[in-house]
Image (tube, rainbow, N blue to C red; front, side):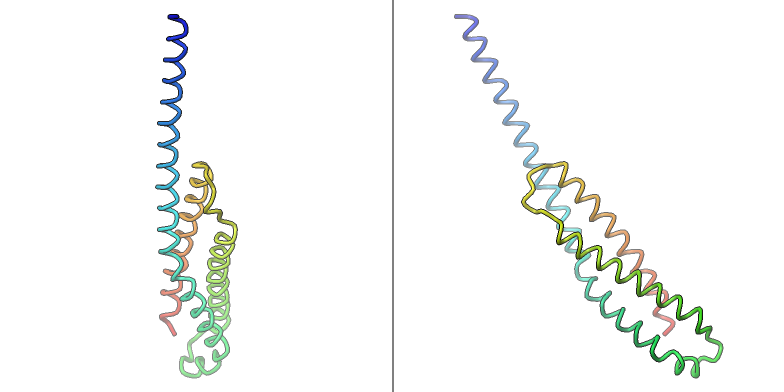
Length: 142
């Protein structure tokens, strides 16, 4: 009888620990997913801004000879390279965001997946911040 009571108590203890662990995992999962989406929501408005900036760059590149007339000391070769690289960086950042959104599985139930996605979106935010700063520095010249 003591063995049976011990087995029942052990089973209850294990079940309680498992439920507690499962509750913690659900909390961690929800918290991580929430943080991931918060960062996503910070980045997302920049996508349309970056798209407009790419159009602005195209316009500057198209009118570079007129700009050269107004600014005779302008190095058009360097300017063309700088603006082309900036446009590429803007497009790469927005493409990365679109790919991430397409691949993201909000229905995932694993904390490991949520943590990996949080890392990805944090890295993406760093890229968006860097490109945004670069864009401001370069486009203010025009």
